Length: 135
Image 1 (cartoon, rainbow, N blue to C red):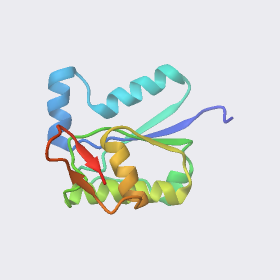
Image 2: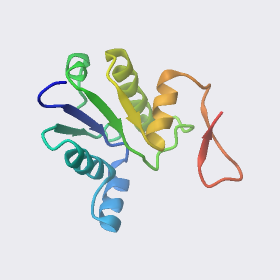
Image 3: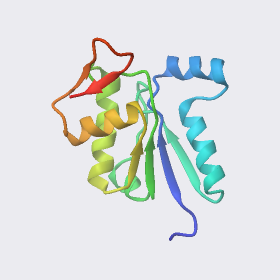
Image 4: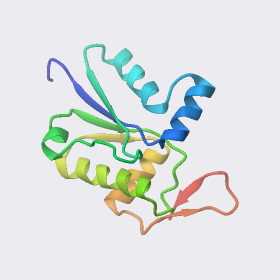
């Protein structure tokens, strides 16, 4: 195991949702992940990126290969909607898979991973549920 773990947290929330979450609970999803990872692995180096943000600077393939793990947060984004934000999220996750870096996605982060892996034709809104499901 490396002396100092390198983690990348991909914060899936678009900028406005990130600010709304900060106002309601004090931190964005990415900040919560980073804080939790630092509690679990105090010597770890955590970097945070915001792929849903317009003009976001994302790591290239070589940079991704330098991480020990990538964590993709939840978000109010819906992967069944084809938007610039969702495309950037999926493109980053495809690059993570190509780099062979272990990854974890929760909630929308899992939907991003599934869409990037093309395990399902598409995410689709569930008509009688409060969440989106994958089919």
